[in-house]
Image (cartoon, rainbow, N blue to C red; front, side, top):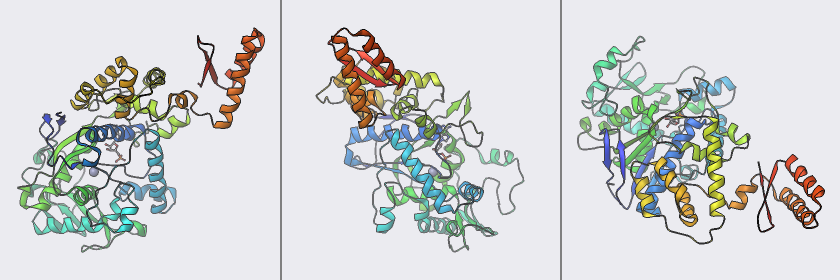
Length: 464
Ligand code: AMP
Ligand code: ZN
């Protein structure tokens, strides 16, 4: 079985060869916890969740380590906490809870965290499979010290900066050149930077900063830059070299470019001898009317808003997986409607399955070809019910029974009353009391219950 991914670093589809097939390692940039996740954020999480499931299928569950961090120290967090008038720790805790709630509803598995022994038990306990930036400040300081010692970073006006011109391969991932960075520096370059492309590794605390975002360091009290957070967390759990690094296409530059520069240069002079991550995977944007969905543009829909409208998590998941992961996905109501129709059809099909089939080999081959979701879904449309169940499970679907799916949303008390009415109607039909049968149908319809009479005389019901 050979997996292949489009690798942003080599700009071609590469056959995936893990450094160690008994421990395949993947790092994906997780959320900055300052606001409820929107469906653009969810796309990234769901795409890598399928990749994680595929890796476990191919290499074995015990042989994959997936780290998805929580960025809980960042300028955006400070700004949001200030705007809300709440402490930073309260904000980040609340948003992280929402993140887990929302991605859980989309059937996303928790990430794994390999324990390196560097973590205290309290830190590990607080992880939930996801490292927090605030738990790795010492590691970040350690990397920054190495960068200064190696001549790749300098201290200036209370800041520590990475010197981009000290690393000859800077720009390798995004294809940007240092000269373009100079030309592209539209705004006045901060006086503490030697080169416009230099980026912050550590910044000084400001007057009035919430104490929970201020950390002691050899360069004074302050907080880390965003990029060094991911370099530290990937290093802590996956080591200096690992297999796959993922994230949204917006992170390619500067975030991932800077992660590469820091991680490679901290390990050796000019990065020689280390590759950091070998395969760089980027998911395309979720767009609305062709424009990237983002907090700043205000064109976003949160996962929670959709769930509250009664759209099921699996419907959102299927809609998010309906196109090629690397292409833009323009979100619209039709896509959601089609996903619902498909899942209704699939659940009707698997309702009759009582045995487990292994996942079809061709299906794994299809997914292994740069995560070809559209082709995988088209194969599912023609699969036998038992095969469909196995394929769907691999893609993160069918975590409930068909019965629950069609009756979704009804609590057991509700369901009991509905069952009673359905049975009364069946009795009324048997005694040819059509008026009563129709009255019951209407009573249920008013509660949003749709009945489907079957040829064998039984009646199925579901919520609209
Ligand atoms: P953020 O919380 O803004 O740092 O984003 C978290 C993750 O969501 C990152 O991997 C982003 O690349 C990704 N992301 C943000 N907006 C979108 C979008 N519109 N489409 C796809 N991915 C996105
Ligand atoms: Zn990152």
